[in-house]
Image (tube, rainbow, N blue to C red; front, side, top):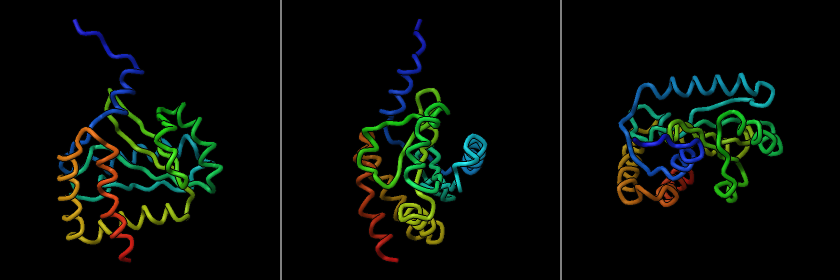
Length: 182
């Protein structure tokens, strides 16, 4: 008989989870809306706006089946104040992964050892807010660009499937080129 994993083991499994691409799922926008609603109910006085970002926000684009949400607050001080209550609301905060993210805080939510949501807390209307929205919007409005990004993601997932950090870094030049172009 196999024993059930502890919550800590499930968390570690979600943190170490590899990269795998899935075809676009039309349920992703609904999953975003549900989590957005939950966050706005939990933090009505703190969150100014919640946006769907990342590949799951782009109809037709393959993606890791993890919903990326960007929640805007009034200042980075407010972002830092939300980390503790978010941890009490089913999100994991990993300090080591946030060391190099001065413009935001990143948290993850999981179920059964698999990541379900990534939450990016940023200053509403600030440079990082605008940058993330701009990249999403470029993909939404440019099918050729989206197709190129899909090919890159597939190639990098094949190359770095068990190394999430390398996978993410491998896309940075593409993202920078898109943002520098505009």
